[in-house]
Image (cartoon, rainbow, N blue to C red; front, side):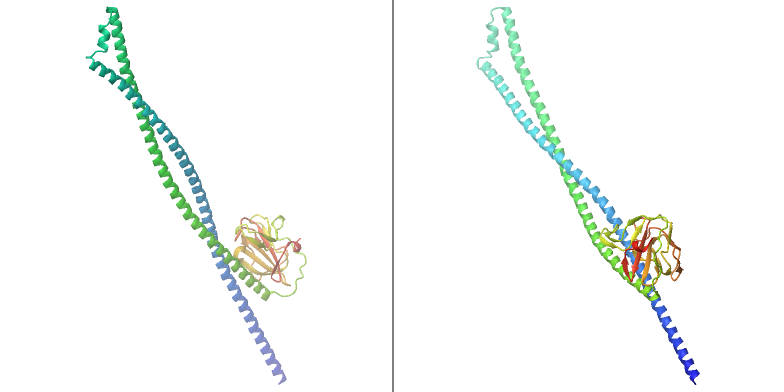
Length: 375
C-alpha cells in the first residue's frame, strides 16, 4: 500500500515536471517567435529608413544644383539689369546728340532759307550782284568760284549734318532694340528664377516631410530595438543557469585590436543623433573570424534589428555577450561554445557604415563597458 502511494507520488511529480518543462519550452518558443517577428519588423522599418535617407540625399543633391542655378540666374539678371541701365544712359545721350543734330540742321536750313529769301526779294540778286560787280574777267571768275564754293559748302554741310543726324538716329534705334532684347531676356530670366525657386520650395517641402518621417522611423526602430532586447533578455533569463565563473574573457576579434568607437554616448554614424553606444566597435575586415569571448550557450543566432546578423552567448551568472554586424553566422541557438571558438565571420550587416565587429557585454540585462572584461 505504501509502495503504491510512493509510486503515485513519483508519477504525479514526473507528470508535473513534464508539464512544467513543456510549459517552459512553449513559453520560450513563444518569446522567440515574438523576437523573430520583431526582427522582421525592424528590418522592414530599417529598409524604409535607408530608402528615405537615400531619397533625402538625392533631394539634397538636386536642391544644391537648383541653388547653383538660382544663384547663376540672379547673377545673369544683375548683369542684364546693369546692361539695361547703361544702355538707357547711352540712349539718353544719343537722344541729346540727336536733338543737337536736329537743331544744327534747322539752324543751317534757316541760314540757307534766309539767303534764298534775300535773293528772291532782290530779284535773284545776291550771287548775281557779285557777278555784275566784278571789275574784270579775272575778278568775275574769281568771284564765281567763290560763290560756287560758298554754295557747295552750304550744301555739303547740310548733307553732312543730315548724315550725322541719320547716324545718330540709327544708333538710337540700335540701342533701343538692344534694350528691348535685354528687357525681354530679363523678363525671361525672372520667370526662370521663379520656376527654379518654386521647384526648390517643392523639394524643400518633400525633404522636410521626409525628415519628419525619418525621425518617426528612427523612434520606431529605437522602440522596437528596446522591445527586442527585452525579449532577448527574457529568453536569456529563462534559459540561464548557474553563476558566471568564466573569469577574464578572450578578445573577440583575434589579430585585430583597434577599437574604432568606444563604449558610451556618441553621435550615431547613420542616424546623426546622440545615442548611447552600448558596446565597442572593433575594426576588422569582412570575412575574418569572430570568436566566443568565453564558454557559454548560444541564446540567439539570427538577424537582430539594427545589429544585423548577430550572436548572443549566455555565460551564466547574468553575463551575456553580443557579436553584431556579421556577414555570416557559424553557430545556432542552444549550441554550446568554448572560449575562442569561431562563431561568425565579420561583416557590415544591419545599421552599419562598414565592416567591423560591434561587441557588447551585458550584466543582468544592463550594458557595461566590455573593455574591462576582455584581454
